Length: 169
Image (cartoon, rainbow, N blue to C red; front, side, top):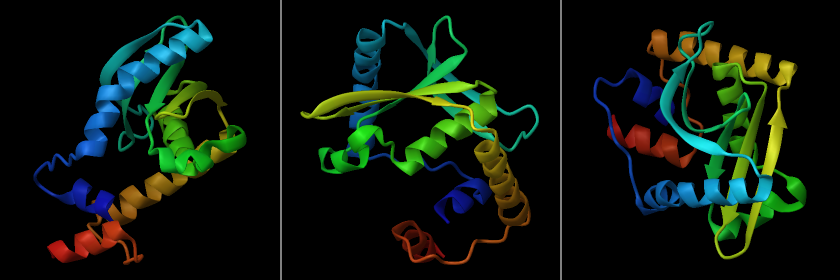
């Protein structure tokens, strides 16, 4: 619901908090740890990408792997969420973000690196999954057409974000 509000509002709200700032500030550290662990070199992208085929799909890519057709997403989640990363698992919302970036950029692989503060460093390589990406494009296209273009607010879902949006109307 908050995504829908952001897409149809006239202004740009720059949401920021301490957790977000720390994530931005520590991103370079995560990228350096990734380079040390893999021997690969990365550079900041600092570019917003837009899908040629689906122009409503955009991605704010932070890092590109030099010499490969891949990107890197760096994460610094709360140490309390370390269980979500056990046994090589990637939390679904981060995984979907990487697949979205692949769908937008056309890159067939994406890395994700995570520093669980004071606990661990991990990384994984995610490869193109045609069925998943086509499903993601379908869902995003439906959302764009039926929620954003038509300006139909999604039904309330009981989430905190929903409560915040409903508190603004």
